[in-house]
Length: 292
Image 1 (cartoon, helix red, strand yellow):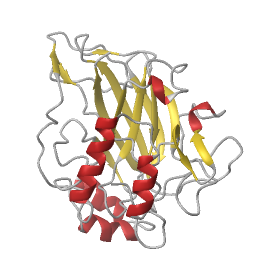
Image 2 (cartoon, rainbow, N blue to C red):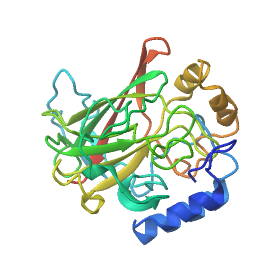
Image 3 (cartoon, rainbow, N blue to C red):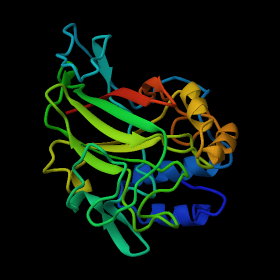
Image 4 (cartoon, helix red, strand yellow):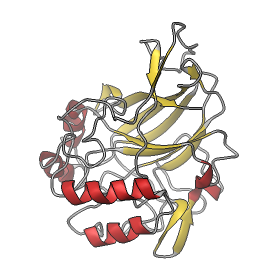
């Protein structure tokens, strides 16, 4: 369940109201409601079961995928479909509304960008925090795990205070930490961002949607996958020990991946590999399998 405590307006009632306004499919909505009802009070970063989601399917090949200097190639020669997950109450993709009405950044000028730390299309805010580079490689589980060139990814996450641009109190006029990128010849998209905070009720996580092309990534109706990923507990501890993340220390201590309402059924396909440090920043990589 997407919410935040303290002075932010992430109450259960507000989140349920936002979620019920989503135009997502009935199965995903029910899953989000049921999971949130059972797991709301206790969630966080690290620990727990590492089994995969029961709905994942696998494809195997004996030929490694082609790589470039920017790609992260699956080393096992096999790939699995990343679990489908809720987009949550704050997608900004036209499927729900904020206080001003339907909100859709996918159709806004400037949304296609690599650096998502600043707001765009007239907004001027910039999200502060520990630097984070996100590299996702999109591969085809129906095509021997081949890299998918020219696909598009819409990615969004909260800021270091746990707030979502466009929705949370104080940042409704901002649209930072949201952006779209097309995959390169190696199937890779790269985003420059900041490490997300840990707010009450969820482990640190990033949302994303996959589309078949940039032109298709203007309407959520065209998405072929919605999912989320998280970060290793050691990385979370390092980041949250730095200035600006003090609230995340308390929230992280109260939760775990094992009790998170999204990752409690397995997260091995959704756990990033992270390198770097809190001073210079981190690079998080993940191979994302889709049935294309």
